[in-house]
Image 1: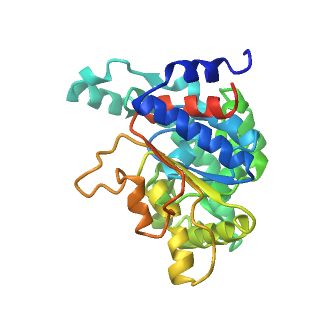
Image 2: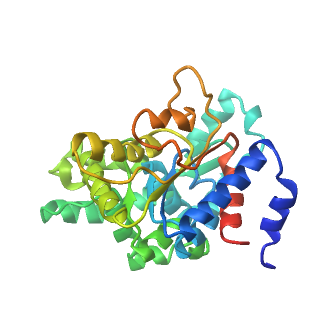
Image 3: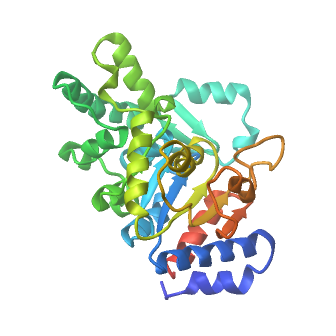
Length: 324
């Protein structure tokens, strides 16, 4: 692709409203990184099933991402897509499905995410077999790892590599593993693989439920990372969607200040892509200035909110940041 084709198109056409906010936020992201800053990216929703890895992986490879906080679903669904892409089923007319149509998808073991169905046998159960090997081994040897560390073990399994169905360069997980990128996965227990692990604990196949490290330990890891990474610079916060993927990490700064009673810079950049309603007490839809009152952002922190579809906005912003 000719350099700057997408960037020039965006600059020429994205002049107002959410389009202008996209340009402003992307320029500020670039400036933050070019001035030596770091950037935490958070992934909520079903961004991995939306194949955000196609653009996010390149951001990781080019050192435009310093750490990722994601839901358990986004962690596992990049892996599901990696090994079962050919078995996914797309339903463009998903708005017209009847309850009977939905039940038929269930009977055929297709789990629907908007217009995309994840195949249970080829994706979920296939990955479960690999995870079981590492869960059971760790449990037997009294070893403990974070959810993403178990996923990395699976990614390095020679038998799994034979099952890849997409170009590995489009997997953000593989890119993160190769870069040894810090990953934090709060609330992993509510994911499909978290449910698998819970069932094996209840069946007795795993004796120690603490074989997989949990949320408090992730917060400790995040806090230690933030303190170290922010010693000589500031860390930006790029939030895709709402929920726990964003709520969990942004709280680390006030925790450091108010609870640990230590010094650390506030988040040095903030941008959220969201269509959450900014009323009715919606934290996911709270305007950035509200975060000043919680000790997360400063009054002069560059702040942006793009009220739009993240599956459209995030790849465009990444292309702009990468100079595509």
